[in-house]
Length: 551
Ligand SMILES: Cc1cc2nc3c(=O)[nH]c(=O)nc-3n(C[C@H](O)[C@H](O)[C@H](O)COP(=O)(O)OP(=O)(O)OC[C@H]3O[C@@H](n4cnc5c(N)ncnc54)[C@H](O)[C@@H]3O)c2cc1C
Image 1 (cartoon, protein in one colour):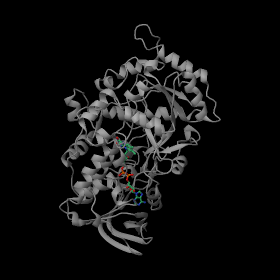
Image 2 (image 1 turned 180 degrees about the vertical axis):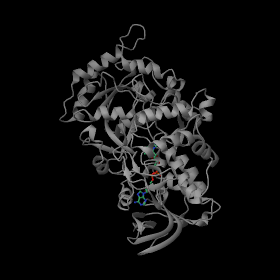
Image 3 (image 1 turned 90 degrees about the horizontal axis):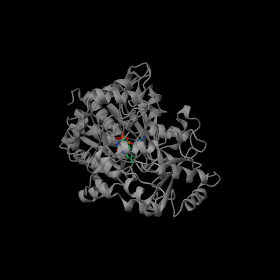
Image 4 (image 1 turned 135 degrees about the vertical axis):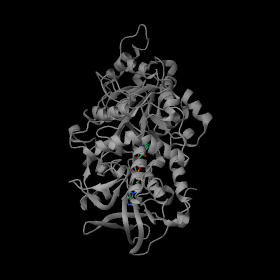
């Protein structure tokens, strides 16, 4: 158990609490801030809308991987990284404008300090990372990305990460100084003559209201991606209208209530149209909230087709490179969804789903099962999806597959010949000596040179290969995940107004702050920067409140 029942206090009508620090949101950001604050003798109140067993927010569901630079894992595996290289990758991806002063400062701070303030601190808390680093958001000769692998996976996934930190919090020697109030929805930031003095809200269990009076207030309430209405309202305009169907891959309470409350008291809420969406959303077979989606990490050896079954090109879409470009390309098509076509062998070896739920061997720290999965893939996952997820279909011939694609497409016409041609074109490139040139095949061969991806990616695999049947098609929707804009903050995580003045006694951390500075990613993330941003921005807020330096 990572929670203690006696921390839940049922408020009666209009209850008032007093604390030195009030924190709105008990996700990883709120937990890290509280953990750091408990090192002093300050009294802290942590409020969350959710149930007690959901402490940890989205991080609990996450895959739990983080972007670090020049880490022991990288050194151990011979990866040569440096803050200069990482910063140049970051800036090339972010495409900051002149006006992005705080996002750029935050990006520089993150890159220069993530290993010290993130990795080393987490290790001290007892968090362990896999020895081998994943390589995602890769660059190509045409687009920037991570020049080297930087995606450090927590052994135990996001669930283990959260459990470790929550356990440390709940067993802290100063635990008597912490009060946690679940089912408490914060609705308002109290502003008395320009000074923030706490929070108001509703106790969703009793129907009463509450006030927390505090010397310092921290907003840690996550982003807006849990509300598809908010995602659509903040849609990136150059992409035209948002897709009709967007699946929800975020937290059910990530609705932006406190972004609005912060804006009401003069905070600068910026870059809200910079959303980190994923192209491979499928319906969750057992949804826990409306439009609940899962993010498929598409197979590199699958071909990616538009809503009519035509292969994207001339530059094909391929997993592991530039997720934003994939979303943009799909959203520029008429129906704004896509298809992935592969066979069973490719699916078993290459297909995975992001998050703790669908990576049980990492989550439950089962080393043998994990290694088996790395070498042989995950048949259980594919069988589960084929049986339970309506986005997956199979066929024992191209004709049968395309017929089923048409059936799932309703009024949208599938060009069945285009699907057959795309498969044939890709398959014609399979033989490295006699095959035709195919850009996707070239990139697959490049990816396979990194030993970990060499093991996990099929070699010269054809799709229309009867020994690897059945054929599989997956209808994929855009999935909302992370909010890269947010409440603008300085490097102490203090909230800023539009003219760059700090709002006294108010802080914002984690996803609520666009992971720091109201948008430290700019247009794109190099991945793993989200959890890292939560840890670092939260530690900085606590350090400023405690008036101490952090290491
Ligand atoms: C499946 C999945 C996989 C992921 N994998 C990774 C990964 O590998 N690497 C990575 O870097 N990131 C990953 N992420 C993203 C990362 O988990 C989140 O961005 C991060 O956990 C956000 O943490 P947070 O504490 O800032 O916000 P949240 O986790 O959203 O927590 C906010 C908390 O505030 C509460 N709240 C909201 N509004 C209110 C209110 N008005 N009043 C009171 N309480 C409120 C919520 O209930 C919630 O508990 C993943 C996310 C998902 C869903």
